[in-house]
Image 1 (cartoon, one colour):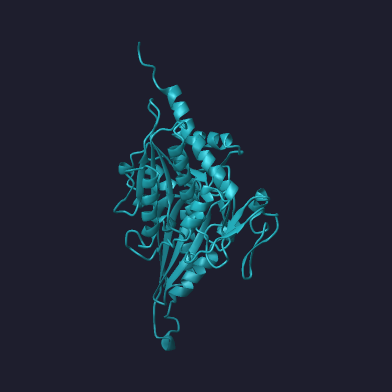
Image 2 (image 1 turned 90 degrees about the vertical axis):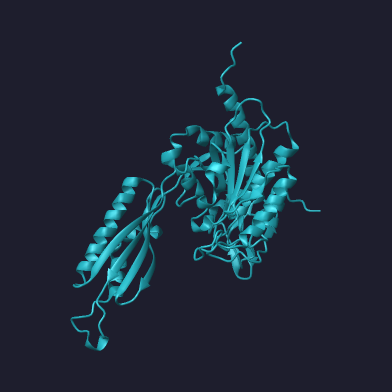
Length: 419
């Protein structure tokens, strides 16, 4: 008989499903294999008594757990995503369970070791049970750990009606890893007033900030002439693009920044002698910092053009997402309740800023204020991905406390009926 708790058993079951999304696909969802896990989740939700569980046309699983208290409580949505990153295969995942972690290196499989030097957070879980990959795939804890934690919460609430809670809506979306997750959630149909994604990392963390993010395209136009007769005529757009990339300051690159310092990051170059396009992503926690990055890219583009007479360089920008803090600051309770739930679950709460994005950022601007709660998993998108079982249990307990806090504080705020 297995000695693992239910939340870990769920994770081990879910990671067997290959749910990798595909950014080159225009279908909805981007890969049909995501729906295999989604259909399983619908069945499990219905077995837990969430009778309206369904898989909608956007590939999003939605369900309702009715509240069990008399006074009004805001409807809360709990959300996670089924897909895994395109950066490493999620097929044939073979999770490894390491009981009573001793603080040293963990052998995954073959030549691969997971060490505290790679991921210092391992040191916080000495004596715990660690689930890793076998080194050949990612694990898929991003975000199947979040799904397992939400499902385990629902099971506890269904089995123990003494735990007070308001109406909960559940949404398990697809295509989050390719930036389309929020597009798959019908916020109006979801019908919640506040939301929480369960998609973070270190236990105890509640995330209320993301980057402000834009993409940029720098189009370098040259003059193509037969190379045998090209003297003083040919202008090589590839060389213009290379100069542009070379002139970007290293101090503004992701490999040279941390904390609240943003970055300008070239991610792709495509083209030839006649035309070459550099794609960049721009990230900063504040809008004025993002605007400064726009100016930097334009200035560097001008310098690259000046270095090659006859070249023309054009710059365009496209908005990606904005820091969700700008919305959440207007709804302080949604963050504070999560921090208090972490504390009541026995952990030290930490307000944290994500050096990246989350569905919560898009959803917050779609009218659903949505901070992010930890899953306990680490090293996302890599063969070194891992999660501590005890951290997953702490995430479940945080969610149990969270739904009760919303009930308690709504009761305090509820108007007293006249006699």
